[in-house]
Image 1 (cartoon, rainbow, N blue to C red):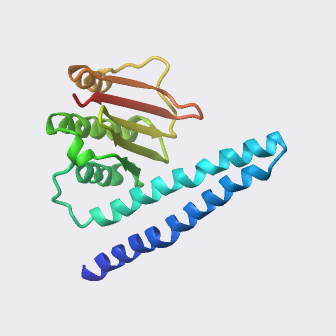
Image 2 (spheres, rainbow, N blue to C red; image 1 turned 45 degrees about the vertical axis):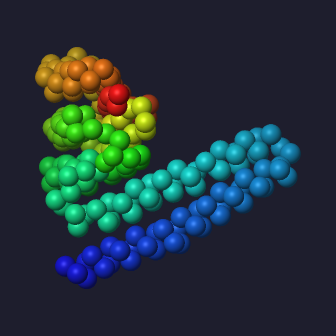
Length: 202
């Protein structure tokens, strides 16, 4: 087990020291290059590419956290609990969902809200396994000083045109409304389904 933990620490360190630094340098180079581009279409493409390294850095940092958190199965913070829910869904889904976490989840989100987040995440993953016929599930949990947001997206068949059962979605909506938040569920722009659940932190 110590060898596994050492490997995780090494991978996390390499991702931080090598991948993130190179992506940051690439983003800075692209940004400085925009000053020398006169063609409008080319400039637009380069400017859109400048944001790509930042998004990738966020994903890598989330991965680093996951690598470091997997040996803390007894963690009580919201991050660790989200990780455990995603890990638990792997066997049912037949593949590992991707998890991205942003913000001060462990300190900014009170337990009264965290409990709802975990319950909604568990229900959303179960729904994807039961009804989605999906090969990919993406989970994103983030918070700021105002709210916490949970987003679960899959590439399955999408929501049914005429739903026959509302209990799962109804429970998730009731949890959001009890906190003064919102819950939406519908088709994703490029296929599949997407759930967005939000709750204020005040």
